[in-house]
Length: 381
Image 1 (cartoon, one colour):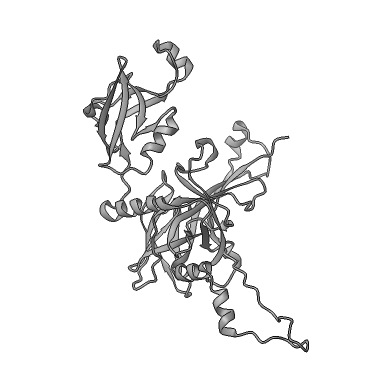
Image 2 (cartoon, rainbow, N blue to C red):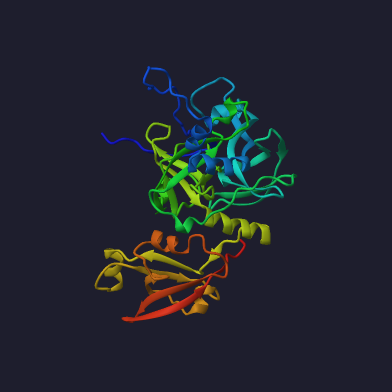
């Protein structure tokens, strides 16, 4: 029997438990206890993980939200619906306020907080709780459901800020520390918790059918425990720099089994820049549609072999049109990366900004050509 796997997107926090061992030591020529230098013991406990957690934890916040959902209740509690019956006995419809909880990280002393879009999506109220016990109503400055990132503003200044690292330089096997507020609704203490593990893999692309929201490309995989309430909290390296935004887990049990995923911080930086500069996240647009060249497609087009992508449509006057791309062009590479399916193409432009340039290697009439395409903002519909 196949095991059912579930992808869980949490509205959560994080716990990093770093254990340091201490206790009485046996020894001495007469069997008496050996005295332990407390300064030396303190030094042995202060590992890189402890130092990194102490550096970032003051900037980790709890994000609590309230959303409203419409509930339809049958007046007779019947388990079925009948159109004729409902005409005479319509269901009771009422609005229900639903609380939610996640985490976030302060990236600017003027009150700018980064979290996941799914944490604050459709929220009527957003509140940010600081580790020092203060809490503020937050304003949503901008978000991107595509990237599952959101930027909040709270009316506070001189706040602790988490240093942001470079997610492009990650090494598989290096320390990864998840910080946030898992199960924060059960705890009165506003201090964030910590879990530690390693970077298990980088550049993970998650299949679209496996994800409940967002487009998850180039993800960081970690075995640091991520639990409900962790979403939006930082993933941190051993230098105390934020390298990712904790987002979801794969699980067959409903709890953490060591398959957690974080959005790279370099993508979050781009979203933050877009929101600050334009008040929104502009979506980069290539101005063309593509599909994979399967064996069936190759046969219909009279091509000898499958592979690559075929341009199925070009928007007139759009970026691809101006770059010289034509329908039925065969795309072999995007930015030097071989593309054999639509997800390959999406990965090549995932996180790209308006104004970025794509280099396309195309095949037309049996000849290879290189075209430069400059991405533009997607038209407002």
